[in-house]
Length: 125
Image 1: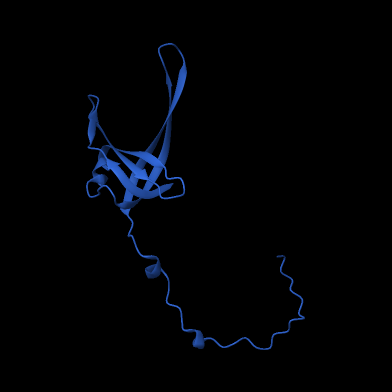
Image 2: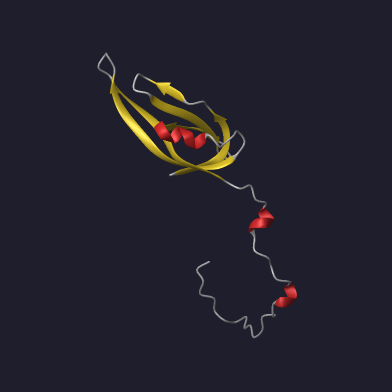
């Protein structure tokens, strides 16, 4: 799965526990009618992928959803979800005009001839 948007925040790499587990968090804000602030964590060697990115950049992040079960000391089962990033790439902010192919001038088209208005149109709409 992928998330696209603008980087809102990049945290520093944190080392957790005695085993040297590393994680780094990134927040991407989607650009849609109702923008979402998505927290994505990168772990272990993937934390280095964020070194060349900065706040404000447009990115596409490849993610995996992770879930785990935990039983607390009272015997209650709890579930936790995480969004884990494994690849990130910068998106180029191109203008809308730059993405469209050139349109030929109107005089390059021949007028449609031989039209019969009485022909039955079999389109369902």
